[in-house]
Structures are given as structure tokens and as C-alpha cells.
Length: 296
Image (cartoon, rainbow, N blue to C red; front, side):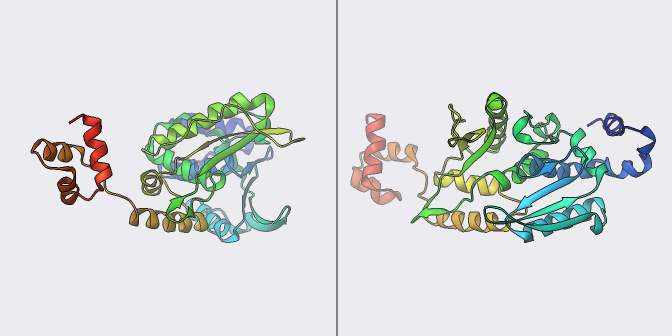
């Protein structure tokens, strides 16, 4: 990261250069802040908003999550609490909004790649500086997935729901959205978590201005457990708890890997399928399938 270049870009966002204070800005532009910047950019690209007047807004159904986010911002940037406030919103249910009135922070996020204005009316991609660093990438994903990935929980008995990641844009920007979703999918898979392909055809309700694209995190047990271990969520308590509960059940019902080499070795020693099944923790049908595949 070229800090001098970033400082210049932030200065250029001011109409009057004398309004830019380098001494005030310097503590905000240092290496230890960038993992939090990656998280906040993920939030802006999710349910958040960065206005043209450089104000930040974050939305959640749980006021406690926004209180934790406000505390995170205070701890890392020492922004006065009177510059941040939470309000209740009633529109198709109850939600809460955290507004952060700190133009310098918003300008830095904008220069680092956060979209400004209505996100459905513009294309944007994940900034390169996030893509090349594993920690930044994880922080970004945790923020974005907290907002846009459905809650991961048990659907029936010991099987997870199919976690869906869905976003919307105006129809003429669908290909921009597709590129962004492919980036997000690639980031998730870089942690060893498998996903479906991005949907081919955009979907939308009758009369809806925007169209949706989506992909799924594959819901097989090992994949969901891998998601919790490698990515997970950061501040969203509800999603963290549900994922933890889900993974605990999946682990308890996860069958051990099939040791094909051991089955083949025992078969070559002349043991029957029944004898092999007694020696390894698998059913006779599993042993028979492996032997049939190997044509032994």
C-alpha cells in the first residue's frame, strides 16, 4: 500500500485543499488500520451506505451488532461518540441504523475502494489491496457475508440449509454484478470453501427495477464446517451463534473419510467384504462400492 499516494487521493477529495489537515489524517493512514478498513468496506458494499457528503450509515436488524460496530470504530479511530448515533427504523419490519458523521474516515474508505452513493446504480469490484492479502480478504468477507449471506442453520435433522449469497443491481449493470459475485465467490473458495457457480439468468419480482444474481455455499457437512473454521462471521452475534450450533451438530454426525487404500489392501490380502467392514468404521455397501470402483 502506497500511503503517500493514498494521502494525496484523500486530499484531492476536498474542494478546498486548505480544508485537508495532513497532521489529523496521518494517524488514520497506517498499516494497523487496514484490516478494519477492509471490514468497513465490506459493510459499505453490503447493507451500508457512503453518501456523497461523506457520511457513513450501517444497518442491522440487531441494535447490539451496531453498538459493537460503534465500539469497534471508536477503539480503532478514536472518533467521538457524539459523531455516531443509532436510530430505529420501521419499514417492512424493525431495523436499526448507525450513522457515523466523520468525513475523514468516509473519504479514506472511498479512496480505498468503497462505493459512494446508490450501489444498485453503479458497478464496483473488490479493491486489489484486499484481494492480495489473506487477512484483509477474510475481514472483508466476514463483513459482506454478515450482511448478504443468509443465516447458516440446521434445516432438518442434521443437515444445513443451503447458504445463499444474493445481491441486486439495475438490469443494465447485471454483468458488473456478475463480475463482483465471481470475485466474492473466488475469495470464499480461496479459503477452501466450495461454492456453486453464479446464477446465469438474473431474477426479479414483477415491477422490480433491480434484478438479482446469486450463488450458494455448498451445504455438505465438511464444507459448512470448513466455512466456520476458515471464514465465519465477526460481529453478527445471531449468525455466529447459529453457525456454531449448526457446525456442532454437523461434526457430531460427520462420517469418517473412507480409507480406500486400506480397503484395497485388505481385499488383496483375501479378506471378504464382511471381514473388511468389521475392521474399518464403514458399512458393507461402502466397502463394496470401493472394491467395485477399483475392479478388484
